Length: 310
Image 1 (cartoon, rainbow, N blue to C red):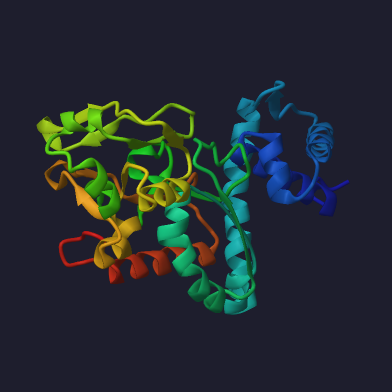
Image 2: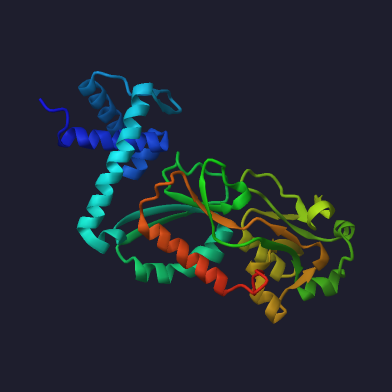
């Protein structure tokens, strides 16, 4: 009986997907099946080959030496098959399928939302699924194809593609708040003000980073309002409830109209820009490359010659 038939090919694909995610759950999400079904597929494949391919625990999966050799061969083989199918199907194949993204809220507002109309027009056959999430996420384990994060937060084993240049963080307040409470002249003066504090994805309260280089200081600011959602923070700042620490790009229109003002401008800080990242150098979905190109082009169109958002 031949080793390769339709059933075995499907089981090999399941095995390859599990190894790419290092997780039954992540692979199951990508393939649209249950983790139990994938477990049965691996047992079936191991029985057929009379060899153990995976070491499984309740938390993770890892290949045996034989399984790792097989996975490397399959990656090359499936790549050849994928390329051949794309050539046979022509350009229509490029727009089919699904992209699953995990992005923080600020990136969703600044990069993804403006890009959606152009992306939908250029890739009408691609299903885009987006999870907006500020907490640290293992995109492989949770079944995402790619993610967007600040460049200094991307793991070194990921492939990172810059979407923006460095981003400027500023302190901002409404004219009404400044008229009522006065304008701080130094970072120390912030202790006498109402500050809208930020809560990070791990639920820690963020210490504001003021200034750059050797002069940079981290300040634990006082405040009765703490949010992990930027839009709620902006609503509070615009409503005159306090001074906030925000990406300048998010309040560009407010600064133009005078609805908000930058406070302590000499203590603004440059931070890492956004990057799109994914786990493999072989990122086979052309629609993702199109989305990257759209986001980068639109961002560049909205920035001034010095690279600062306008």
